[in-house]
Length: 366
Image (tube, rainbow, N blue to C red; front, side):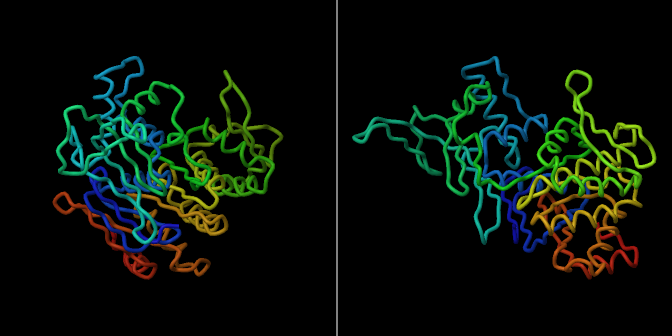
């Protein structure tokens, strides 16, 4: 679990320091204060800079400019352009600008473009990676270096091969020791992903956790499963106590489907991390306190660290009510406000008592 967080040069986060974190963390702030960027940075760190993860993230942002059918210099330029979108100021050639993410008391994940050259030495092929300020030979080539727990170096051509669907190098495949991490984006109800997540916990005690969460909106739900419909589409269906009919969950509104996505993600990231962008989306204010109670309880039971963002005062109030209910340790929750001061994002921390004070007197801490 991250005890603190520092982010350098990622997106609009030139140098962000969050000195203390809890098990459940709520980030808030105006637009363009980097809330989503913080979630992305944490995901990059947890995945140890996996290039496969980076390309997936950029695709979700609409920033993957790599075209599978092209090869050669244009392809290399497209890959550089794509990966450059990760860096602050989006420089066209961001060499020697280093992205750094992580807990300084544990380890950092670092991403950087570098120049390198290969040569044949006495011990065979030798690779020289140029240091910042070192003169670069005319035959040097572009590479991408990742340092985390362990480190790896990727020639840009290797990234091109991976992007074209060729068999990836081992560094792209991830590592069994990487913690589980689920990222729920804004307005994200991915029914195909939900079906896969359900399959992983089917016939386990986690099924009850899912049903109980859905009862926040519809107390009459008795059971849930997924079945194939319409060209192998996986559809969530529920059985109600008051009826023998099986009802598609999609017919019961976006709110209950949002809760399904959140709880399925939670029960699939034991000992890992859950990231939720705009927690309150599709949820009426009246159910948010109950959902926060589920999040705090399951996070503690499964040893999950949660990071969520919000624009909603109702969400903040519900978070505060649960944190100060006496059912959870006050240090288990933390609220972080992000502010943009002339292009520099800064964090202000609120502990349980401070959040309760601001919400009790109806002062919006955003």
